[in-house]
Amino acid sequence: MGRRKRKKPFYEDVKIEDIGAEGKAVARVGDVVVFTKLAIPGDVVDLQVTKKRKRYQEAVVKTFKAYSEDRTEAFCEHFGVCGGCKWQILPYEKQLFYKQKQVQDQLSRIGKVELPEMLPILGSEKNTFYRNKMEFTFSNKRWLSIEEVESGEEIKNPNALGFHVPGLFDKVVNIDKCWLQDDPSNQIRNFIYNYALKEKLSFFDIREQNGFLRTLIVRTTSTGEVMVIVSFFYEDEPARKQLLEAVKNEFPAITSLMYVVNTKGNDTITDQEIKVFAGRDYVLEQMEGLQFKIGPKSFYQTNSEQAYELYKVTRDFAELTGDETVYDLYTGTGTIANFVAKKAKKVVGIEYVPEAIEDAKINSEINNIENTRFFAGDMKDVLNETFIREHGTPEVVITDPPRAGMHADVIETILKMQPHKIIYVSCNPATQARDLAMLDSLYQIEKIQPVDMFPHTHHVENVVLLRKRLD
Image 1: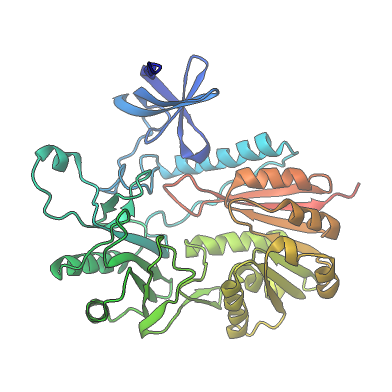
Image 2 (image 1 turned 180 degrees about the vertical axis):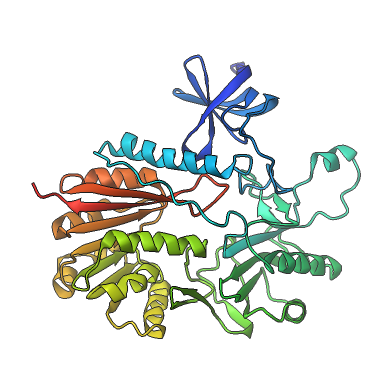
């Protein structure tokens, strides 16, 4: 006989006390820490535990007994089902408070290093329609509302164009209006969705690996340019051309209309050939008089206006005089490198993705910047003694690594180079804290500036200025 499964606890009248890592709501029942979602401090709830761990439990809210005084009305009809904008129910100034607290907690708890007083977080002026890039998924497995399921009626339209339901790889919420990206994003998505239904085009089935339409990417710029990329699972030239022609005619303002035939099992198109159907193969973004060319595979900070604030903080922290050699590690398409170049003697950018480095070089070229050099390769391999001898020891290092933080070998090399200053830009304060602890032997933290790039989510960017210790 198998062991009987023990029933998981059910807690009543529990008050949510805090918001923790990953934006989860935190409650305490006796000595037990319980994490849950879609609740905010001040809510009183009944909780059904779903996971028991040694040090904590995870639970779902079964009933709201009382709502927090801070709670605000969610503005999006898809709130709670779609995985985005989970903090809509929290007023924006409270979101900023918890983001600042998250940075403080993680730097002190994980980093265990001496911290100066943090500068107040820079909020985003726009907290809706702030993203310049969105990716939507076509699926023949539409997420059904409770009403639809309970009605017992046959589902006439099982297709969706929208976002994956968190935790369910094959279910997609059909999105009518998304508040994250400005016009004409919603109009383009809804037009393509309705066109596909009318023409009876098949939507992708991720389990069965069949269906014509896969994904839709829309990029917009602050200059009003628009890039649209439609991804198909197989080539059906007449159907593809007809769809793209219809999009082109309906939205003549599209700058770059592209498509890709992606026959792989996954949706990533960075390793695929993306073809132009109409217009050019890039859009142009502007920042402080600089132009940035963004191709279909280019990385560019998704909140353009806040990216400008983030880069200004980085440049201010660097205090460049025009005599410095600057290394920009994880340079991406060279945005920061090109942004600080006019205040430096020379900027050397290193990045893993070869296409991004090509973009970085083009971005220097179109802005007539001649004091930048860009190199592609794995940071820990490229950044060695020979490289430093050839390009000069930097006085300033700017580093903006991915969420995983910096490789230990890269930190080792920075400690050998001993630049006067390090400006560490991070999208994950937890891994930033770990790296700061490794730099602590030679560097003192002088300034900390959190920046909110993603309103209504728990994500936060953080910029830290480290200066070489004199002792």
